[in-house]
Length: 335
Image (cartoon, rainbow, N blue to C red):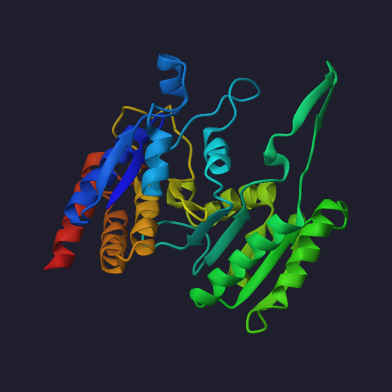
């Protein structure tokens, strides 16, 4: 099986190398077609993506992507957003669960965020009226809203989930968020065996930090989905434990949610867990459940070992030491 591997910026090359070694240890048979992309590549070449990358993603339908940097306030638009729009990956799936050995103030967190990926304010329909005024258009459509809510219910049905919660601000934005909520309620009628409710976005944030175990599957428009994804990552240890998949009809782009961490790039202490968890998602989606289970067990064992775990979670290990510990766990599980 061929798949595209995009290292990205900052710590991206270090954690992408970890994935390559782990993939080999698991004997996945994946042939990685490697490409450069991101702010660093842009500075060198004037292009955001290495030539041939988008064609390779079209051909394989599978990409695993490291973090890419985005200038704040000026410069090019987010590469993540551009790729999602280019490949019509309309659903962003972000599982969040407690991990043994990772310190957190909560236990037994196990929820999934389904984020609409193609419209809302992230559509990029914004412009300056004058030096003191800027406009942004919040685009919500019924077809996209129904599609993402149906995706959330189908996911819940396939994975033994019991409730879908629609996230909105329809009390204030009665047309845009009102349309999203209306679409969600209509789709929910098609799934009588799965509970449905809705919650206003600000109330949701309070409820999540009070008791995240009351939620199962959250489905949200683009901007809210982005915000609550990071909030939920904080419930289980941080963005270093947040994988995601951008899913379309023909293409899936898996990625770590965290940024490029330029402050620690090249120091050999980056935590590759999130990208390895995204790789685990890739394996499950492509019929390699046993290898995904093996990787999950090895990851949990390495994270619980203070000599293997990286400094961001209180360990003394390096990226390479952590990767070696994961590989050792894989080899042990195979015996």
